[in-house]
Image 1 (cartoon, helix red, strand yellow):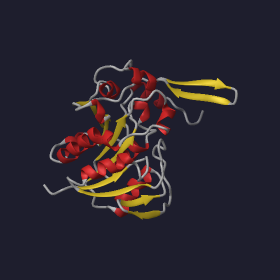
Image 2: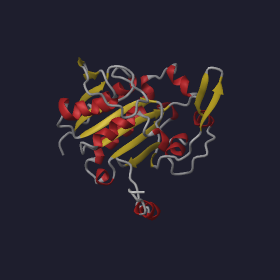
Image 3: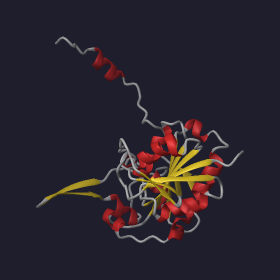
Length: 263
């Protein structure tokens, strides 16, 4: 099989250490084109622009826009022959069902699925106690080694299998390399949700309590969930679909069936 053409993007920005770590690794297995935000675009979800400015960069292209912009610009214009999209590596985990729609990293992968291009979102868990600590956390480039190794493995081998006949994209979360070699586990996004909102003098403070619980290793997430796997030192791989699937509901069918537009 020929080497894959890989579109590499992220939400931390084109100068991030996590993107560089994946770039340096993936160039050994494929032809990598970087189309990434010029600046940090974390937690913007699938926000999309109507027009973006593109700048040449030593790694490829820097986009003045969101991760979803980068995927659309890349697959639609800058790298249309892409075989697989890789988004990451994000500085910080993207774990839990409630995070999927917020994450720019995951959203870049989701956007690729509408082009019928398989995608992998990659993030690295950093054991800190507060969300805001990420702003001042300094992560050594070597810390991304485990995430990069797992990504290389998946990019090399998923194309030879039927993985992407069942899943539209993979959400991958790895521990820091300092924890040592990590097993890989297939997981589902955790349903545990511990956001709180506290009224303060000038507003409302929003806080995700799960981060300090993760740092303490004391989490309520069950075996088989993405968060449990990462806290246990494993690389979590969640196979996901886009758009989110729904089921037929008899009760809703009955309710809609009784609607009278003339009433």
